[in-house]
Image (cartoon, rainbow, N blue to C red; front, top):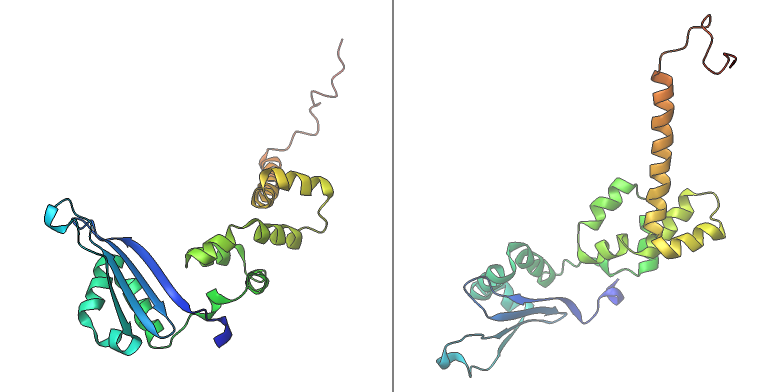
Length: 198
């Protein structure tokens, strides 16, 4: 599992909350936490301020309340908690798995679960919205995929193909229900199609 971990475990960049205009970069590697900042100000006394960087070990970051407060202020409490988990050795291996393996796992999930998975992180959102995933899903749910369907999928996308098929099925079901709910014609009364035209 350790081979799944790259040198950089996590990184994020962004501007500080208003009224700050400063720009920040936060990175966690296997051995250290790196906090970088760029002072952005219209004031003349701050214009020539050089960028700053602070490097700490994981252990030092876990004890540095000042830096933790800055991370929480700029990126929010969830990012801070995630960073603390990484520094404590609680790695999220599943998002580091190869795409082929994740697609194989996702093939066993229901569509409702796929929707939930896509909301967990950017990587899963990209995977769940990828053409490769939706092609796999169409091929799994359809007995055969004709070359005509493949050509259409290249034009409109596999996700559109998948949901178009589902919508057509729903329309057929609703038409059938409407026919079942219509009152039956009286057997003694001739239907309009059986009345001879004179």
